[in-house]
Length: 333
Image (cartoon, rainbow, N blue to C red; front, side, top):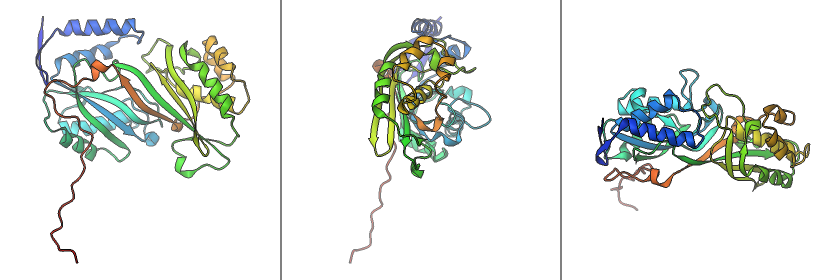
């Protein structure tokens, strides 16, 4: 049976059952974890709704319990959904908001990505963009709003994610960095940290670096790390920059915690492959506890290029709207 979807691409024949089955098979083969009822509902809603929209969101995570929706305490997804429901006049189930990364409590984001659905089209996205940001609190901002093709999925179209973890290495903490960097009063050895970071690059089983989470749907611990570098930003700031195909719960924070101990010269850089090979979280716990969340920021999410194509005859992408100054009619003296 074929359903007909009316969208920004025109009249599009889509077999709902076949679409869901094909994507489910792809994700299973790619090792994305179990395909539960939530995933299947996301895809069913995706192929039966008229219009899909992609958002790039930045937030300061200090006062939020992460991204993932919870009724209490507040989460970023909860606040974004409330703004969208107010502007779109739709309930959260109709919107079907999905985020790319389930950032943890206190973690920040510059490039979180999410998609949502509407049964109607928008021709002036700048107005919608301004309206949503007008409802959101100051510590959450939609940086970009664009139409998305039906194939795009904020979570399952991802090719890689980039995280940064900041360490402020000085005797006295810079108060302007207190919410964004982990304060370390030990004198760290950046060279040792850089040497250790290189051991993370490649495809590895990260079981030893993953905390158990009841909400974590990703069951495959094998991840590819494309880049892992410790960068000296100048002054007292060090930054761990990691890009990978995906990350387990608290994986980056656990990686940063081990590099911190290596920087203190408590353990040698060669300990990294030993812990990776153990595939045991208890082995890492012998040397390091997870680093605090406020040093971590989700910088960007990278997608398959064909999934980022804009639909035919769509509204222009909105990057926000500048205000125009009114002309002063008074003469200058």
